[in-house]
Length: 521
Length: 114
Image (tube, rainbow over all chains, first blue to last red; front, side, top):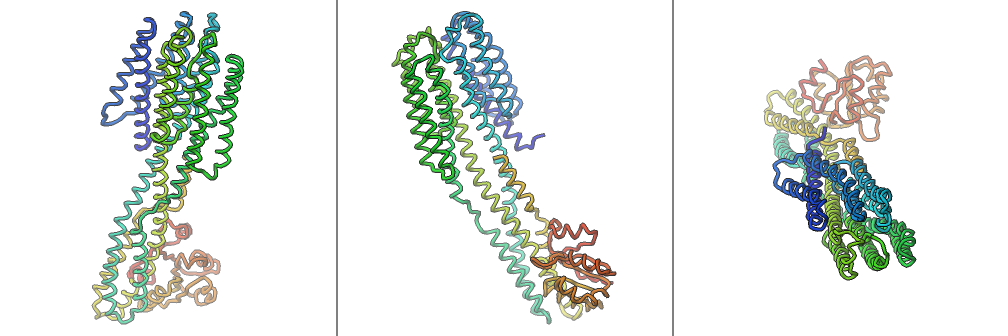
């Protein structure tokens, strides 16, 4: 059974997943409908209809989100696509265009991380299912004798898409945990902040009653121990007031370090993915595209490895500037290499998947680029514009017998996935900063709560002295009027009892909270 | 009766009051003082022990164990300013001994000694 805040987090996530899936379905259906043969029209019309219905429902206003509706929509679309894909592979292979069947599994592999809600494991399984269907294209093409019409590098190219996809899956899982942690922290700090007004009222009443008791003590003959007790109570009350009034300070250095680490982490992710992909592509490029492409790919992989070494070596001294420069440098080198590598495809007399590097780069930038507006958006847009420009400059439009009919729109779909990944990363970054601030506030509030416990206990011994002293005065001088003194002390005792009723987290609970934060971080 | 509390003012005020109630009181600040005054302490019929006898000092629970180990014949109660969740108070409560929260009313104190 989920706690209500967790339920809300999952419902919001389910609707976000369903909305993205609906947008991708609609876009894919609308883009391919005018380009593909009539045999696919019913399928593409169903994509448009399912996508449009999803957009209208999930984007519209909701009084209460129900996670199961989002889950059901995602499950329906995923199953629908998993069933349709083998059929499209068979039809395209029969039409001697098996290269048309590889893009949907590739988009699905990278977008599943953004779509499958709630569970890392389910996301991984669905991603693997789409990867299997991508590999099925190669298996089927070989089976029906059209293997030479598969795009260069298949099925490895499709499998490569799993690398950024798994990174995305892990990041999304991290964001999910972060959101849950954020909700819990907010509740925790809100509960602690509610102590403030209660403590202020108790403090003010203590001041008033201590003044009454001090005044009335003038009438008591033997009052030295009681006067000292009042002095001690006043001192404790002043310290209690100091706890209540001092503003909660957030350490700005912690925040700066977090931002620097986040930027460096982005550069590390980009360097790692580029290094692995470039080095893995080199032998395939050497066999299918020639030595030049293989050498460029190897060089790119080595440059990415170099950046990776620099980032890892400086991991304990994170710098926002270093992270940004490393990411921009690697982006510039990568974009140059993958753009130049489009040219050899013109001379390869077989089908190919254009802008493979661009597609992987836009998705990777969505995972790695720091900041939505400052870096991520311009870099993804620049990569997409570069690919579309190359499509027309290199005359890919005239190669429709070797590349998919949906190009360059497929590139734009990948750019959309990259932008959504980027928005998700930005949300995670902002949420992390908020969690960082809430953690600082919670730590400070817990420290004060612990001090409050100690101060509260210190009130009781002087109070006992006053109670015993007042009783002694009453017994010793039966005719003395100590009613006002007794009332003042009774009021102080009542305030002490009220303080003892205040629930503050114990040290063990504070430790548990921090431990939970660490394990969920 | 025996009172052990590290607070000088509290000890004075409570022992004076108990004297007025007709219950002369041996008021001590620590376990060390108790061991020094063991003979007089063992003649008391009631012991009121503060749970916390100061930072780094043996606690009221230690004093309780010393008294029982040395055959204290009377009743023992704990007195504490700490919340019941405090570890020292929890330890005292686990002994099955009555734990009273400071401040106790004079009537309650009188009821203890009569």
